[in-house]
Length: 465
Ligand SMILES: Cc1cc2nc3c(=O)[nH]c(=O)nc-3n(C[C@H](O)[C@H](O)[C@H](O)COP(=O)(O)OP(=O)(O)OC[C@H]3O[C@@H](n4cnc5c(N)ncnc54)[C@H](O)[C@@H]3O)c2cc1C
Image (tube, rainbow, N blue to C red; front, side, top):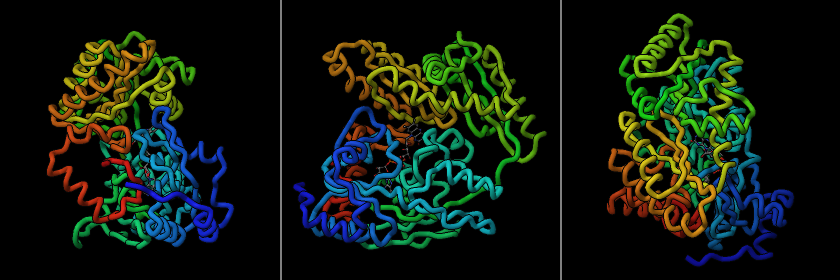
């Protein structure tokens, strides 16, 4: 679809709308906002706009639709599927200045926030009020609530508490063309027509720009224990995961890291962990309101791990020790990406299919002569597969990469899974979407996009062509 350029008269109109300071066209800004955390991709926009309120967002989208200029919404720029990359140039709409926590309503246990609030800032603020906002992507220190909603972000605690979708009660959003909609609210139930709130969650900035969110909060768990269980084989570690749940415990986190993932994180943050000989580790957390019940659950988890072949079970009671283990886990993503040129896949299967998924991924990569490092949210069956180029020559890497990815996704789907658990389709996973969806489902997605965005100005080139 041909798009119009951002001409000097349009720039003048945008300056009028947002204020001159919030309209950036210099090369440094265009380079910075032309990247996110997806590989080494770069697509500089023509102009960056930093609106301060919903009215300005509406004005931008109205102008963009009138002029047929593409608009790419952006939060913290931590996305891993290229969702915030302005692949068609045009306007990059950053919500970073819309970063106010408008209300923590303790009576209804909800927070009302603007989209540019950093996830961790919200969590800290909510905790001060004795409440809990569980969605916690490893990027929570820099990703923003709008981006978390657009990607339906999750994190280690999703296994017990669910992902972002389980916390979004209502949204204010601006449609391409500038109309403002308000969905849901501070209510826990709502069957008032189609569920537009949940349609927008995970829509990767392709249907509307989120300008405000009403989020569900929980009571803050008062007690927490963390366990680290090393295993001599990948199979033992992955097979143990379902056993923990079968023993009647729903851990608040159940993470899996293979040896190379732990080694990369150790090198990255300069901390050494016990049992370096282990092929894989499970990092498990149990939480609750009362120390006694949490300790009992930890004991059950420890026994299951040992019965399933764990070399040891280390219990971290002190908050400082727990924080150190979590720092290691949270740094794995960044550490692995530093090793070499890479591609990251975000496979998700039913929990009980975790062991065949990991074994199959390893076999596929070995067959193609490609190195891989797996880690992720084992309790959710969500494995991040990092495929590394290492010393492989460029031609061989190019020849084998897409076949290997396709085979990994075919395996994932054959195990009852999907090709993204939390990172989204965006730009980079688009070629593989039809492996997971039928022709009818693909048509429904296209039709939905057309209803929201008939002129294809909002984040074009993402999810669908
Ligand atoms: C080191 C690292 C660790 C990570 N760990 C996790 C993890 O544990 N779990 C997880 O789920 N993800 C993880 N991610 C991926 C990423 O952080 C998430 O996808 C996150 O939700 C992106 O938020 P963001 O604010 O950075 O959004 P961006 O990257 O800026 O944008 C992401 C998408 O959201 C859209 N968007 C942004 N704001 C809005 C808005 N206001 N309205 C509409 N659309 C909008 C953009 O157009 C884009 O499509 C990780 C990333 C890194 C780099």
